[in-house]
Image (cartoon, rainbow, N blue to C red):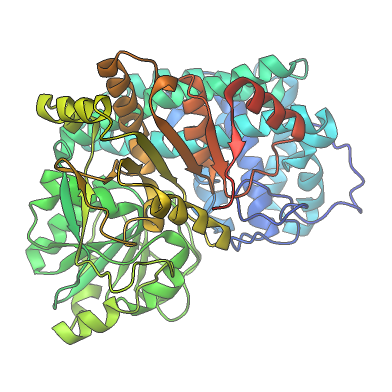
Length: 568
């Protein structure tokens, strides 16, 4: 892990893990996400520490590892103090304890710098950290193509750990053993360790590690799918209300359904209404969550609009998991964070106790009247492509879980519609959302689809589609079907697998168009899982990841038919 760059010539930081990164340089002074160089450096150190700790393959360390890696995901934790205290410090302690007798050279190289990061002023160590641990260190050491594939594996692992954290929360909530989660983590950590520490890998080896992350992710998301259904009930096709109601209120954003369940329980007792934001949209499709009378529906759109929409919300806002923007002063005093989330100076939900959140809701004005509700609703972010005069108080077609498709009448109907030519195309149009104007391509693809096209969406990419127009139905099936969160990737994959089996064809013989909207690392691991399943002809965009070199892109196009989404 010795440096290969001139310390004086290097920028203060380097990050290229998300779509909004500055092109062609990457983020080198500060992250577009608002991450500063100190936070970026600590997160780089956390990645290497967690990977080294994973090399010992001890199940007792898996939770610390997966949470440490998850905390480095885009838009999760921006607090240098929190990152040191909760993640880096414990990782160093474990590496020291495990390495007393026969430490590896990699651990010997890592620990002195890691200890400096933990205890010394930032200026004392940031240049060395920048030279030896930042992602472009891989480029200087291995060259752009090898480094790009190693980075691809790392970013896939970040996405996997986000899903693994939700599995851990559900398993802990249900007091269930972690056996299946441990098995998936062992496999993924082997691939990550090889990608970051094995110097002798050729391109095919590196691709194998990247696809290994995709394979492990399929196991993790399958576990998550089962745990959600067992804990909250099987998602059902329904319409999600998007109209506010008068009353005291609280908003929850992020992804975590255990947090949602506990918040609803606390709010119900006090008569406080609960709304979801962003990727919490599919919460309404779970019967156990929908059974709470205080759960009124969904407020707002995707994560990138938080700083526009949160000032409009007249109550506290709970930040869970990821897809979070730093809160503005206008609502910062109403924000509560939990799980791996970190912002300095913001209140924390401790031990899953929402009493302070509920007290905050009761002390705020809430939605005071129907007129107040309407006026706020009119200020919610739009795409500018909505059909003239179209307005919806609810969004249809949510809850299209793979178990819905397994119902004989639903599957038989869908198969018949395809065989008889009433459905000629299935368009998957989803993934991350972001602020780039180029993302209008996803809206336009949906609007341009003819009436024989069934559109599947998921993740916050749904908000590019689901308020544009009334898509209508095809023989009783809504033309726009929402398959859930990005966390529900397994369900999406299973829908395609079940449909191909029912039609007697393979996945690539389905009348399928796949438009993957990538922004951060969870979209990357979905992409790797599609490739692991052998799915071809994926269209990725709106821009391509900076770390995918021309050589990598050529390989992906030749072997998998992967191309960039063309402008609509």
